[in-house]
Length: 269
Image (cartoon, rainbow, N blue to C red):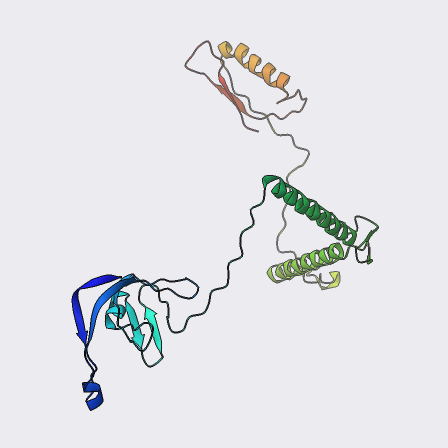
């Protein structure tokens, strides 16, 4: 306990004659006081509290306490909320007790992870077996509950049926579009007797036995050897082959700036 620098004199504020006869109390001692919640979730700021002998209660908190701890009091809803943390001092709930953390050794952790891994593999193998049985990949799979799954590929059947229906719908749409666009072409052919007999024009075809005259273009003699080299190279590589046809594709060569280089051969296929 410490002594106040300036002792305080207090008196009872009442007009009763009996109370007026009481002597004023002198507050000279003080202590450092710090309050906290029941679960220690929040602690008030440390402050100086005066010691009052014969006080009607253990602790009496006033306006300086509210100002020092930034507490807002709402008398209508009976709340005292701390402005910084939004903690309601009059309506608080005890926080659940924290479970003490068990520290495991590395060996124990390794064994636990290994056990979980084995259990996971068992469950995964069983689940894959059930799925394979339903897809028709195996004949029969026994469940751990005693149930048997027959190897019927329901998913595959439904998938094939949906694909066939979708394809049939697509074909029907294409067929309707073609009939709408080329409706005149798909009309039924009239009978021969209904055809017209009058001849308005006649188209005479060319003689199919007539041969077309070939045209040849000259080439300077100095390019004959280079052109033969190019022809042999293309024959050896398989790009062209020997033929006895009377028709040939027009071709020509373009000399390059380098006189020692082979010219550029152009073919019109």
